[in-house]
Length: 626
Ligand SMILES: Nc1ncnc2c1ncn2[C@@H]1O[C@H](COP(=O)(O)OP(=O)(O)OP(=O)(O)O)[C@@H](O)[C@H]1O
Image: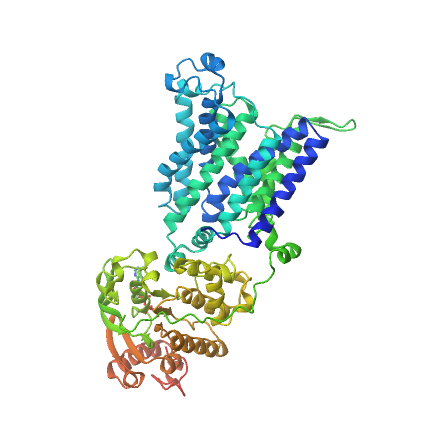
């Protein structure tokens, strides 16, 4: 079930209020031209929002939504066109399509079913793609729709005008559609599904690592956006009454994308603002395009002035504001008054986690003969060890030893070439990557991989919603995890604006929200100052005791490893060379040789460094030795 929060409702009201006011003003004061213009604006709002549901949340620019508008317009037009006009305009129409003459709403519903079926068929391959490949695919779809419409002259009159569509859409018809489109898009954006897709937009690998099925969510957004675009096409068709395939091609696509990008692609309110701004620019420039005589000065006709103006407006806005006029946050998340109405800052008084430990005794994480080859390079060979609940296992080794490769293999990000990883007997490698966290394994990354344009709370909520069951609210679970790492007070800040140490802890909170049995930490203290490292150690020590979590920690900071770990595994050049307690590892000749060998080769090139101790693993006296 979709939870609709107060903030979402405030956001919807704040976004649709200007639409309602514009409608009332146009209908009351400017019947005729003004009313027509605002009706077109409302239809464009539906169209731009259709594109934004997929493009804004996934970060993949779609050129294909205009294709869905065309399908909607033609499908509904075929059903609403009067049988008499149909006989003259489309004499070769198959019998089963003739004489329907349906009212607007039933025709709209049938057209939306057609659009949804096409979107489902196209969405299966499109959802598998990311970035520019997906964009090119949507462009291909637009071209195909155009060519099919031109070629299917029995149904569409080919490239000639398809006329006789009843003008069933006026301002009062367009307004509720625009309101519903805004509401659907905003509810989707704030829902757990929308948040997951936005997370994948920020970092696909990290989102998969917290249980997001990226393909599924891309697919859902694609179909939802297509249906909204289809509705916009039906509205436009029944507003203008006559159209041809070129009306739903590159020009319209460019116009809609300009509206979306200018306002801010990631927000619903940005889509509405962008639509309004571009409509104003287009109207002004269209008046100037044909030349204007001001009496003392006359402007000549400038061909293409409107398109040039739109292009310049985008350039100007992007130059100053990379994320569009509104940026990455909705209008109600920026204006203090609306923020207060929506509930303001996150309640920092939320209870710290009291949830029972998820660890189950006996569910050991076993790494059995794990190896990884990258083409000819053996990055890792025959790693064998266990991680037990409530214990901290350290993974150390010189640079290039294979530590990250091993963590990636265990967490499923890079499938191992040989061997098995099991949790309580379940083979982790046999699971899709996004199921690995649900099996009890969570991780952080060597280079911080947060969803930077999502708040701290949203970052953690994405993970919490992967495991929330029995009506548990993921937001509450996320707040608990934030408190656990001492970030309760910054819940509403964008992750990218947090300090480095806080970002590292936020990654841990995000992993913790998955309620894992095992937490894999890839260099959690990298780049931290001593105070931040101490704070981190306290957090790690607390959570492993509290939840009986099994921790596997990769670290170059041997001081931290010796203080924190119960068991240490040592890798060198892809081989597991030792395993034992910190004291055993400290006196292990193979380990000393691995580190000393490295120091010797460093010393050859940098003689001044020979004065540093070769290998000092004493937690009380060592510095960073690797
Ligand atoms: N995707 C990849 N393709 C090819 N080679 C890789 C890839 N990832 C890692 N390697 C290689 O595998 C070896 C082990 O790398 P890995 O990053 O696991 O080492 P590490 O112990 O984590 O090093 P560091 O401490 O510097 O992070 C290195 O030789 C590295 O160049």
